[in-house]
Image 1 (cartoon, helix red, strand yellow):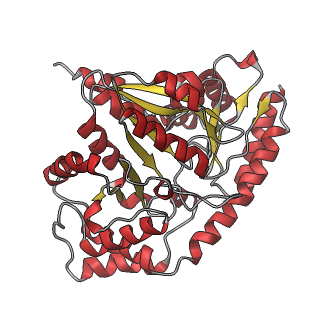
Image 2 (cartoon, one colour):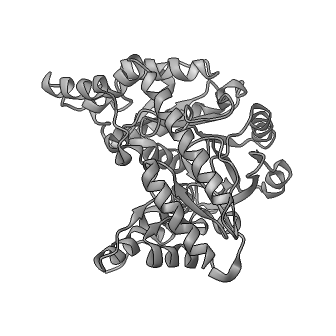
Length: 391
């Protein structure tokens, strides 16, 4: 029986690597999982009021299909949030999705045809390339300075062709923790306007920043064709409940997309309604838990980056946001980055993700680890990594 060629380009290194970890566990070795960026798995639960909102919605009978665009009150609150960051939009400009991944799929499906090219920040979150390929497009990586958190503008311009349809941004970035500043965002918006391209900006980690105030692309978007992807998995600690959204800027260039993309939302019916009520409460209710979460994670970042940079043959830029470190493997004795990650897992039981899984061109020679686990686990894992690279 045949399988569609479209799935051949679909990869997700972050979860694909778990297969190898299970084999190691079957041999009796304990594994430290530093591969998945899910705060809830590491003990950071949504606050009581948000959990209660989900329970109350179920008990009140809010268990039916919502509108395909999403609960009106939730869309209104999301619009308020995005307007604080710089947009000037209404609930009509918001579409609630089953996580950012579904939103990304809908956007790429709506703008990419066979042979079209989409620019991605190198390294990038794997589903971006996978969805582009799935819909017949070609992902093209552009360079980013990981130490200074700046995109290479000349490199971007050199890679724009007649087939380019969009520039994707992820800020704060997964896997690198890079956070683009206002100047960089403005330059990217200007390029998009110059070449008549969509800008798709993923801001799922928008409140998880450590050293400087986060600037959303909405602040510099003007009337440009900017599409924001965001959700509740990371900042609001609701990863398993799968809820996100698409926000469209007020731009006449987005009129055709506004008309056609919602058809995909109708085809898939709706987003989980009780969870939408929980998301609504997460925006309306107390926000102190977010600051507490970020403060704790900053301690983890400082510890992990310091330890990594003290290890022989390893160098690690300081991530400005999110909860990932993306160290470079300076010592070539381990072979490829995938061989490094595999040997580290098999010999020490520490599961990370090979950098080439985030794009061959700029991810190779690195590995990604998550610093969400508690400090005892991180200390033990750092000791094991240090033993491994020192052998």
